[in-house]
Image: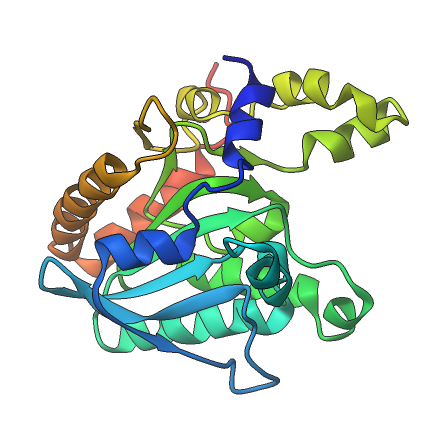
Length: 262
């Protein structure tokens, strides 16, 4: 399967969104709202719940499952207040020693004038900085698209996992094609060059695990079950680590990316 075919599946109509993963994996989920600075961003859902009895904080970039929801969720492209809401919930999780689970699915952060005026770049950068030193375990799962800094703002984690057909890239293939060839019609060629697939990123040691998907691409019950047990087991082990060990391992995970040992 080519990279562009993986991308098409990641964008496919009917693919489960973050809310579906939360509903099928997290028990007693209670959504929380607002960044306490500007407002509530519906592209980011977050709250508290239980994973096998373990209290957790869950945050997801939500695209919506139909046209009305997608418009209301801004197609999963978050504003600054969405990232600030996510960070507020992470700090709350740290205070109460709850692990953090992030479900990432976005083509990128919203780049409109209002978002820029309210500090989009600063909000994303602040998340990157704060997540690196957050004193509680963090796991991020790419469930669809992982686009640029908009995805990375919820993916500075102890481990990053990807569904088999998810993608993760610094830019969309269409965007790369427009820059390099001055024509978006080379998106398929760009996708293959960008190394956006789960297999590529596992080989590059940017992610730690690939979650298999069903052959029919419709019934994700096996994916929910796999994630439920894998998340519980991994978070339980991470919680047992001393805080300084947890943070040092997180630091080393990102410091080794792109490093060439000769």
